[in-house]
Image (cartoon, rainbow, N blue to C red):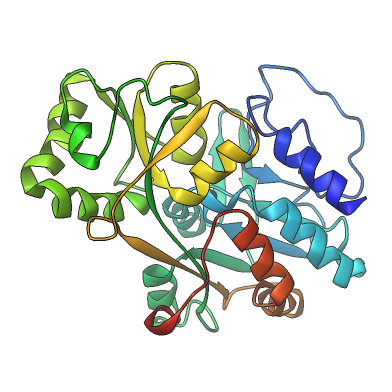
Length: 306
């Protein structure tokens, strides 16, 4: 039954209105009022009121959380129905935390105190040094890949091709999407500062590259809608789109031009539900949770990455 629910949750995320509430972990959902094409807050999950565990997780892991939540709740049934989590870009989550844990989306303002923060290891390690989290735990890695439409109609073979005239791009915004830093490193490894400036300055200026606010949602949608030809994302995001059957594929980036990110999480020093948060950290490192990450395209932490 749990496996069937997880499969349904995956396939439901192909197009807006996204999961049709399949990924809502709230126990009491009250009166359900779905409106197709209007429901579009896909990265807020559950009911913050009365939550006994609040997770702020970097957005590129959105497709892992349904299975993680199900597995964690099986071990901790007392928390079933009382978990709230956000999967926005980590920079946005940090801005939310810096603004009294408050976020406004359109006409809705939400204030909720997180117990766990998960993002790139560089950021979470620094938070540990600043005593913002108890301990930074490294738990998964991913490298970069070029996302394109199935069949690769623009014949994109490498990062260098992103600089070609006529190739429309959807690229993460360096202002708040951490992946943009790794992408910048890989562009420079491939074509130096000229390629970086072509992608992130010239093409942005002439409109042939559009920056995202939430790349894990916007880049695949722009490619599916024919509004973009390519975008650099985490390889795990390409695997997910392929897994759910979207007409999307990836172009591998060779190791000498690629950049690997390590993901880390920690219990926030300001956490209200510390016992539940520490239990989550134990589960995150368990063989079960690690297997879920592997199944969905992430790689294990090895050697110096730990």
